[in-house]
Amino acid sequence: MRYTAYSDYQRLKYGEKTYKIPINIPAGCPNRDGTIGLGGCIFCGEKGTGFENLPDSWSVSRQLEENINYIGKKYHAKKFSAYFQNYTNTFLPLTDLSAFLAEAAAFPSVVELCISTRPDCLPSRYLDEIARIGAEHNKEICIELGLQTANYHTLAKINRGHSLAEFIDAVIRIKKLGFSCCAHVIVNLPWDEDEDMIETAKILSALKVDSIKLHALYIEKNTPMATLYLNRDIELISLEAYVKRVVTFLEYLDPSIAIQRLVGRAPAEDTLFCNWNTSWWKIRDLIEAELEENDTWQGKRFDYLGGIDYGK
Ligand code: SF4
Image 1 (spheres, rainbow, N blue to C red):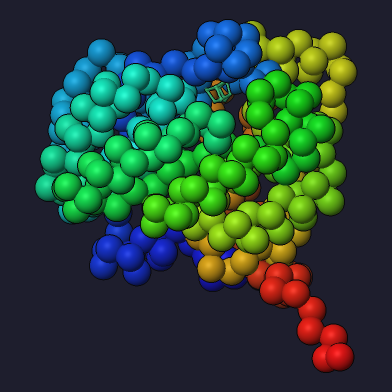
Image 2: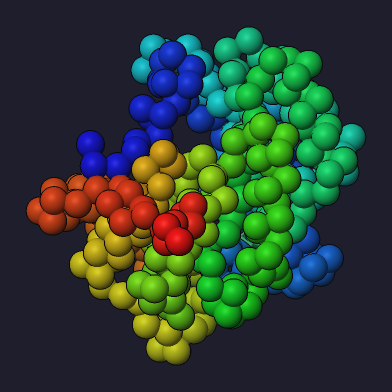
């Protein structure tokens, strides 16, 4: 394998493969309701970021039971990560979030709580409470942060409502508590070039995030990004260019960072454009083939940290 697969990383950490169980809670997002911004990130649709979720009216236990029963039987799985996936989970009042997390942490087969949020929505009292729940139930904690790109000009264009600094600050505070951290990156935002992804890989390596999810931009219907797309105000790079850009990103990335995804997926009925009408696993295969053909690998160009000793 020419990159560090997340399944191997988890197997090393937990002694066997773990499975992520998405949990949907009524979290909302401060970038959608006017707290930080209105309308949200310009690519984000009505359903937020979780497509595979059960209704948020179901209790955490019911969602876990339903999915653990199914996945446990299908894959003989025994260890699970409770993945609070949709919207900005730390935007909930702390007492509510705490109750939801504690309910998941009480499941014996749940080994990890994985909490998705925005980097600018992670105050210390929330982190401290998450740490308390993790310690009380002996569960690992992973915080998943959307960065999308290190290009702060692009972050402004996509209406993220935060810049690069908030992301850096959040990762430093997450790591201080001993949690692991996963960053989400969109490899082909229309205003970004290969250099932006190289810088993104370098910053994520310098921050020592633990894992990364790479996505290709999909154009979801009824979003500001869809309007830009329909008006031909943005151009998307080709699938071939995406594959090459992912390979370049991997070359600059610290090889100890696990790759959770090389490309994302979204339901065709919700999108105007998704993954060049190509299934995600074919794109994954193309990326792996490109690594092979070029005899390259994750970390090949990871030689830029730690300072240069000029020997003077
Ligand atoms: S922060 Fe996440 S949930 Fe909120 S608008 Fe952006 S992508 Fe959507």
